[in-house]
Length: 484
Image (cartoon, helix red, strand yellow):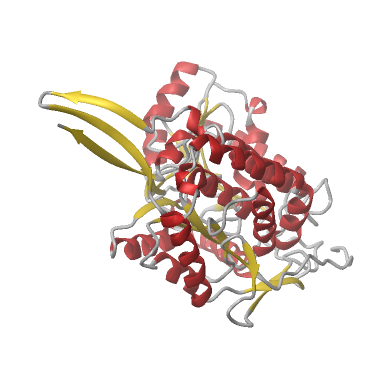
């Protein structure tokens, strides 16, 4: 049974616009429902179009007339360091809020917010590694190539890691001298309001940053706003197409980080105990609500039974339950509709003829909360929907192959190309496979998402890169000044 301990989070009655807490334009609110208890635990104002207009106007004025883009990169970096310090102070509170409003297990919640600190700290060093101005000569002339901040940036983030995802976008945008309007998803607004408090405490100039919790319609209005110069969006591929279409109306700059169906390729020469628990955790951690999760496991056909048995053992060993319990590894899904989506996909897998090995439903010992058991399918074909479509839940599929070339072909037979992994004792083989898989990030004999190096996808997994100097570069325009 789930705990009956009441859950409450701090509620907010104002919006953070242009660096100040102001009255919202309407009395609309977002009720925050905990996926642990299915009860309302907080509320925040729901931004409307009028609030977007105020926030974008403040950002436009701050960029066109204010000090922020005219400060030196080193001066901006000093403020970014302060933001990182303020976020660090709030890690315990942010992690608790993330657990209560989105169901993230305690250890993962802390890790996500430490990652956010790392992003701010790294962004504060971009100016030391980036060429802002370069003298050039050519056959018939000479001049300078200069990099200038793009302008007003709309940042739209999902619910599965709002502070970390927002920090990955906002920190380089601010470091570049841009101004920002952030729209977090309505499912997880409290942690992003805490981020607003950290930004306020760091002392950013007036107008530079706003935080507007809202639903999809207001997000669409923000994306299409004529005074927004760039959009940085994380979400589903379907939503990403809509964002790109709206941006095309004004030829706005766009960075998209979208869906994934990443493959883990297991060679026939490696011992499972050397990597398998970490690989499984990379697939079902945070209940599989991670775009880069390793959800397709590709195995030599003659090792399928061995691998399936080992994964089943790991899945049965993890604790599913209240994410406030430090021993819990699988908490609830963030929203009821997400639980329903995952359960629907499990039924699809059964109907397609995949073999259900373990899991497949709601945990019997939990009477409340949006939980789904860790689920494993074997004997999966890559043309099945459960192998091709992003489920965003704790569901792994095992696909057998007969040669390493076939494994690579299976990995690449996907609309997505976000992440992946290869496990092989032969390091030369592992690197060869890594280079042939069409994906934006791939790990060798391990799995991790590096938050300070370029991250992004091939194909329908996105457009552009976030993280590292490559992510910083995405917030600049390039100008040639010719000299005669």
